[in-house]
Length: 450
Ligand code: NAD
Ligand code: UGA
Image (tube, rainbow, N blue to C red; front, side, top):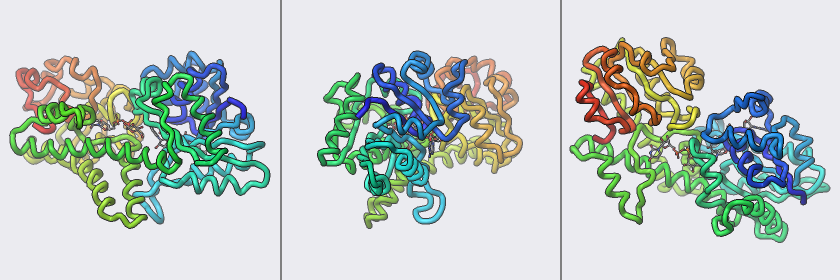
């Protein structure tokens, strides 16, 4: 087996993961391929205008691109060149037919498996990097191994990085998970992939399991994280009704070492491409296996999340004298979290749409996600996109802070206040601004869970 690696799929997962693998394995050639030629051209661009924004990523790409990291559209040639094939293509929620709105749409994955089979010129280890339903590896093996000459071993190596901290997460992972079949070939393949990570990850953090456990663990891990966010948001509503403060409650609840402090920040609800998709996938799996109460339990996590955005608009409505029509509201932040330009499933889009239904004049500002916002809200007429926060706030009746961009607390809020229509309101859905200071300036202030 040669040591070269190809990754099919040059997206949020394929690009950063392979860049770090190449950085830490200078003796291996790592090639990232995609059917999207525009994306590959961006990864190869001379001025490093790479297709995703991720802190620290461009520095890694500068270090390794052309050394042992390559981006290409030649899927056939690279599959033939490498014995280890990672697959990191997209697996969105299926929006048609059986399992619509819940199951994973596996068409891109299956197309990839078929290309690997068509192009293979020898035995291959195929590594699932995408998040997939349990037992996908079995289906893939069935497709791949219907081949006269070569044999294929499918492993599961789900990725746990979070956007915005991808490079740090990749360089210092809590754990790397690799699931493999319990056969001799399976063990050999597993060791080959363990070897890739062992170049920098301490061996005790590389956890190996059977394939089905690895596939299910990824869905379970995301479901647990999403559930914590929905749990604290459910408590936030109760805080608003009772005079408790959700940040205080979270601080003390999280001080219990059995619970821990992370993922207890109340806010506008979780966004991002994966939490909703993966929890829905879990719901679908539970339903498929007749576990209806478990399915309902996980569905509650999604319902609570949707409710959170509806509540933001309801509270604005009440605070702004029960009419929003023709008022100007500026959304500060459109990305689903800070330090990313990604807007997939962002709560800000839902809030923008709910406000547009109320005939609000919506202005959106974001330091990294304005182009994506323009694309996502293209069907809404009248939305204004403004890179400069001060201009976005001019004449506004309210600002709704949707993303916790680090520089927002350091803006000149007095200047912003002076340019707004009075009474001026700030709804800080991330509880990241200094509410006492804002009130002193003259703002009316709303927070989540207070
Ligand atoms: P993405 O949409 O950013 O990238 C997927 C890429 O695959 C696209 O560039 C697409 O053109 C390419 N592709 C699709 N079909 C192809 C084919 N047949 N041949 C070659 N290329 C093809 O998606 P992503 O965010 O990178 O997610 C990929 C997978 O990783 C998903 O299963 C997701 O759940 C999982 N994941 C994502 C993250 C994250 O932070 N985004 C984290 C962990 C896991
Ligand atoms: C998440 C997981 O954290 C990763 O481990 C996983 O690999 C990834 O999904 C995936 O499978 O795609 P990501 O979605 O990039 O990563 O970002 P998170 O930091 O998990 O945030 C998700 C959402 O929850 C954001 O909208 C964030 O603002 C929100 N959140 C997070 C809260 O509202 N409160 C919190 O306390 C934490």
